Amino acid sequence: MDDEERIRNILAAILMDESYEVATASDGIEALNKMADFVPQVAIVDLQMPRMNGLETIYQMMRLDKHIVPIILTAHGTIQSAVQATKHGVYDYLTKPFDNDQMLLVVRRALEHHRLSTEVTELRMELARRHGLDSIVGDSVLMENVREEIKRIAETDAAVLIEGESGTGKELAAHAIHYESSRKNEPLVIVDCGSIPTTIIESEFFGHEKGAFTDAREQRIGKFEEARYGTIFLDEISELAIDAQTKLLRVLQEKEFTRVGGRNPIKVDVRVIAATNKNLEELLKTGRFREDLYYRLNVLRLRLPALREHKEDIPHYARYFIEKHKQTIHRAACEISSEAIQVLISYGWGGNVRELENAIQRAMLGVTSNRIEASDLTFLTRKNSSVPRQYDGEESLEVYVKSLVEYSEKEIIIKALEESGWNKTKAAERLKVNRRTVLNKMKQYQIEEKPEKG
Image 1 (spheres, one colour):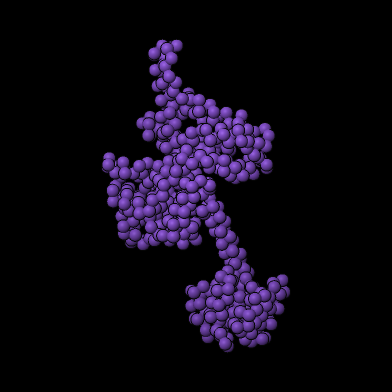
Image 2: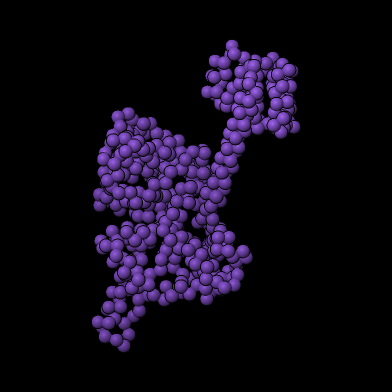
């Protein structure tokens, strides 16, 4: 828009020759009125206009549609004002008299900027749909309470401690808290504290400067800097060594850190969500977790129930996972029988919802029809039959004791695998054996593979 009709006509002609849809206005008031019928992607606005100046016009236009990309049109004498305007959201500026090719180049770039910003907004909305409150499924009172707690927690900015057994959905809950919060348009950075070697934990958290240590060939930002203004999710917080806990406590207290090898402190504004499948209060008693860090993290607490506590949700979960995976597994119309549902309900689910999802995927891969039957879940019924039997005197005491030892050993290995997210290296560390021993025992006892946590 421009108050000079000749300028408006020249701009319109050049743009229409490039097949752009164009509307013109003599001033800001007319432009705002025209937006009732025509909302532009790019607005070329003269800086000096009667009734309403260019910057005020842009402000009012972007109140109607925040995705409009504004370009200032200015005379040489006001270039400084145009440059200043770009610092306040104006995309670019053109000077009068303008070069046609330069003007078209700026418009093309502005349209590409509009396309990208619109895509980013749509992706963020899709992330919120996929990872927000709707991802926390279940019709039981317990799960309804979980959703209510997440909504309440998301309205605040306090630190959160999520507790629950492996496979109960702690990472899903962290996503939901983030995407329901005011920080939803900022990064969510996930840190698996159990997978970071103690020797590099400080570099992972806070980054390092080039030359800070032997392998530091370039500057690297850490997880806290990556999450700035957003949320950092510290999964398996109980696995942090004491010295790493001390460094974490410092950044939570001071809200700043220094990169390894750096000198200047970096301010950070992040929300911290931590998760654990262990009882941190028990770790406090044994000195394996810092009390002051515990209270810093445990401002708000969210407990996720084990699946065995709300088995009434199993039919809902089963159908949800069928719908979720039917495209990738190529089962366009897969159902599940009532008998198969009963098998699922009667099973123990030591691995909770994650194990249930894996079981549904496995059953879908194995079915020959479009319906999961009880017979397609025999891998679960075989597991259920693995219980210690009573001594009946039909065999020697030595043989019976050996069977009990094998049963106990198998259960201990499965528990270690479950608590380690089925990471065999971590399970071996828990059991104080090498990884090869764990693999051999899994083969010996026919322990089913589970998907790695992710």
